Length: 232
Image 1 (cartoon, rainbow, N blue to C red):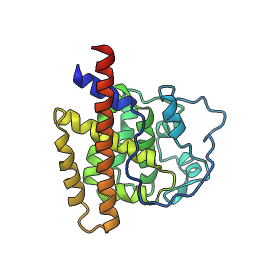
Image 2: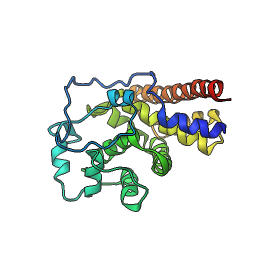
Image 3: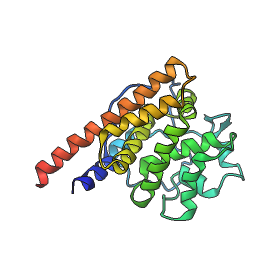
């Protein structure tokens, strides 16, 4: 029963406060990507919607605008539809390729894939969340420099997105380790190992990320106690 409570807590947590990333972000008033679209994502809780940043067509992701990515014939249509919340994250091979795109070596399109995976975390649930969580943890532990670079330079990524990455990393750690929170330190060590030549600023970002992971765990503990109080 307790593991079920933990998993449910991870999927519905309010983004908690933790260390701010070091990027200086531009202030923008974002709009809906396609104003006439039928918005997908009804499973987003209301407070998450408040923190979910819509992206304008003319905003840059990497070296290209969002509009340029959406017109790119080499990007699968399902990726574009999920990005625009026009399609759900279904349990099938077509949408699972979205997860695989995180390991793509296509430097031109990878920034789009990274932001796409980040957005997917906001409304993923059920069968899609498990493989997504596995990919998220593997990515931060194996591609640490790239992960930190995106959150240092991409203005469309927010502190709340940073916390989503921490949340899904924690989700996978708890499942893999039978809820042993001490395993978080192994993730910290792997990230530091893959960032040996990084600046001191990037090392601080790693520690802030781990701080966010622990903050999410503390929120799970609080939610579990509240659930037990009301249901047991």
